[in-house]
Length: 346
Image (cartoon, rainbow, N blue to C red):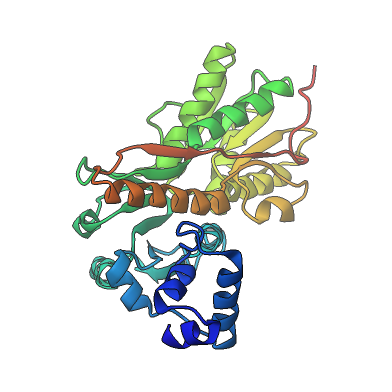
């Protein structure tokens, strides 16, 4: 700092004010500000981050701790969104992955606090309810793609709007004239007919049922699958075809839809001429299969960005001495209209 001040021909205090971004606030002239910045650039000056942190109480860093998000091709977009939002705010994102190991999880979270990050995003690859680690009560934190299983510590949760996604899927079929012969693959027909712990399934099903009830349309049947993988979608659809002829299928995710496509093809039925299909997630397979699959997309990128914004709101509250906000922030799920839904036959 002294070298910068000497080269710019100003006092060390003036140089410090300019380089900390307070030049305008302290009425330092633009000419002086320019000389200081040019001197800093010529000397390749960088502030001592540790010193700045001790003086200001902020490190301009945030932590991102996840289970398997970083190594998941689809959910990794959450990290991309978070990185973009962090970069726009001029902060660094530290990323750690627990691989579902409780000891590693606790160690990573403690390591983030030891490095005095300004806040932590605690993320899950898929939407689930989890026990919030007690170490998160040590500073500002936000849950991403997860809901707290307990009331304390209170934390905001950033999650996809799965209920809204269910509504959108139902509206797409109703808009195409489908009002009967509609079957669910993966869950249903009852609101509790979902795999254990499937938060997304329960909420998608709730949204579907809400719109159908409002429009006096019927869900013909539902087949709950223990896992949402193609083989279970295939078996569920084959079982359905053994006793009924569907006009439309709502698959609870794209992998189930892939299996449903295969079962329909094996039965000599085509999508969408014989059976319309709509799904959720917008996994890459949705555009690989033919016809391309209409689906309601998980907004992973926007989830990551929103989590960073929510975390900085919590950081501001923390600095003001306010308690954390116990709230849900639901990010809309956009519909990807493609080729798998056709108008209902008369």
